[in-house]
Image (cartoon, rainbow, N blue to C red; front, side):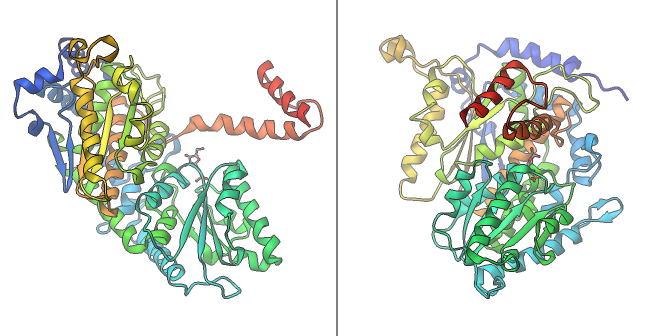
Amino acid sequence: MQRMAIDKTPEWQALLAHHRSLRETRMSDLFAADPSRAQKFTVRCGDIRLDYSKNRITGETMTLLRQLAQVADVKGWTGKFFRGDRINTSEDRPALHTALRQRTGTVAVDGKDVIAEIAAVRQRLYAFAGAVRDGTWTVHTGTRITDVVHIGIGGSDLGPRMVVEALRPSTAPIRVRFASSLDDAELAAALEQLVPASTLFIVASKSFTTPETLANARLAKQWLLTALKEEALVKGHFVALTSKPEEAKKFGVEAANIYPMWDWVGGRYSLWSSIGLPIALALGPEAFDRLLDGAAAMDAHFRETPFEANLPVTLGLLSVWYANFFGAETQVLLPYDWRLRLLPTWLQQVAMESNGKSVDRDGKPVSTATAPVVWGGSGNDGQHAYFQALHQGTHLVPADFLVALSGGANRAALLANCFAQSEALMGGRDAIAAGGPHKAMPGNRPSNTIIFPQLDAKTLGSLLALYEHKTFVEGCIWGINSFDQWGVELGKVLAARIEPELKAGAGTGGAHDASTAALIGAYRGKS
Ligand code: F6P
C-alpha cells in the first residue's frame, strides 16, 4: 500500500500550525505558569530519569507528536523489529540486536530459533574471557596473556571501546587497548611497551574485508613474527570476531579462536554480540551480563510502555520536533562524566549511519530533513570550549545532558555545573541585568537531562539501548530504513582505485576530476 509522505499527513500539518503558535513562547514563562511542569515532563525507566521539561513544548506539543508517532506506526514497526521481520529491506535482513539481550523465549530467523544459538556462542565467549583473565588460557608457548589489542573499525570498534573506557576498573588482570585507524600511528601507540609473547590480538570485523582492520591485523602479525620468529607461534595470538569465519581462517586464525556473529546484527549495533569480547576481557563476563540486563530492561520498557511514559519515544519525538519544525541541524550530547566521553562518538555512528538517508524505505526521495549531525563530548570540558556558541551563538542546538548522581570526589561540583548549564541555556540573562548586549544570553535553548544513581554496567546498557531505540523511532517517523548504510560504499571503491595509482610510478589508471588528479600528483611528486 502506498504510504502518504509523513509531512503530508494531517498530524504533521497540525504540528506545523502548533509550531507557528508556540515558536516565540519562552520556556521560562511556561515554568512560571505551571509549577508542576518539571514533574509533568519527567519519565522514568527503572533508576534512569529523563527530565524533558526544559524543552520548547507544552502538553499539546507532546500530544501532537505522539499522534505523529501513531500515524507513522511506530508501534507496528517496533513489533516487526523485535519479532525479526526483515525490516532491513535493501539488504533483505532482520535487524535483531535486541535478540542478543533477550535471554528467554524464542526469536526465529528463517524458521530457526536464534536465542539458543546466541546463548551457546556467548557461553564459549565467556569461558574464553574467563580463562584469559585467570591465566588458564595460554598461547602455544604456555605464556599467559597480559595485554589485548582489539583491532576493528566503526561498529567493530566504537561500541566496545566506549564501554571499556566507561567502566574500566582501576586494576584488572588484563589490559585492553584499541586500534582502528589505517594510520599506523594508532597501532604503534597501542603496542608501546607491550611484550609480544603475552599479547593477544582480537581482529573484529563482521565482513572480514574491511581494509583498515586487515591492514592493522597484518602489521600486528609482522610485529609478532619479528619477535616470535615462527608462523606457528604467531597463530595462537589471534582471535577473530566475524560473520565470515572462512575469511578469518584464510588470514591464519585458528578455528577454535573464531567467534561468530550473524548478518542480522548491524555493525553499529554489534557491541552486544561477539564483537563485545573486549568488554568481557576487560571487565569480566559478569559485567557483560549486567550490560545486557540493562539493555534488556530498556527493550522491555520501549516495547511495553505507553508513548506518554516511554523514554526512547519521547527522545525520538523531541528530536523530530527540533530537526523538522525548528530546523535544528545538529544535536549535542553532553555526558557530565569523563568516563562517558566516547558516548557521543558511538552515537554519531548509530544515529548518522542509521538515519543519514535521503530516500525512504521504498527508495523514494524523502520530503523532510533526516538525521541531524550528532556531536559532543565530556560536558564539563565542553564548557571551556564550545559552550559559548551554545549559549550565545546563532544556531539552535538541542542538548542532552547525562550525569550520575554519585561517583568520584568532585561529584557535587560536577552536578552543579551540569545543572547550571541547562538552567542558563533555558533561562538566559537579559541585556540590562547582564550589563550590555555582549553579556546578554538569549536563553530559551532546549535540553533534556538524564540522571541515574551511578554509572555501572546495567545503567550503561540501558542508556545505550535508549539511544538505539531513539534512533529507531526517528527512522520510523521519517519512513526510512535505519539499518542499511549504502552511503559508505562509493568512497571505499574509489580508495581501492586510487591507492594503486598513488603507488604506481606514473600515469593515472582512472579518470579523475582535476582536483583529485592534482592531489594524486602532489603525493607522487613528493617522492
Ligand atoms: O564502512 C562502514 C562500515 O561498514 C560500518 O557499518 C561498520 O560498522 C564498519 O564499516 C566496520 O565493518 P566490519 O565490521 O565489517 O569490518
